[in-house]
Image (cartoon, rainbow, N blue to C red):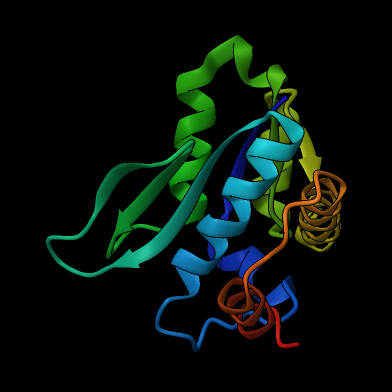
Length: 154
């Protein structure tokens, strides 16, 4: 399954993240990277309100990030992406709590996952990654541990 994620809709649902943080988008992308690695999934994330000159599509590791220009919303961009996918939209999941986007996704036979539920899946993936690392007897450095604690409010 592949995922289309409404980033600014998901961030407030993530423990330790806030839309008030300057690097909130980067924090989410980092977590999505772990999810992609652990679950072997593909993710496209959409963020609206990109500053002038910063809009566009960027490959950030295995995550595709869409920074939507001002004057257009991530919701509109997700719906447009579903339209581009055509019949293959049924192979995608749309992560949002926005009812209109959920409705559009269902019309195109895409799976819908509320942001709250997906946030829990992301946290599970982080725990799996940590368990996997400790199972390999790889120790996390003190700096890495402090980064994770800072990122997730520990």
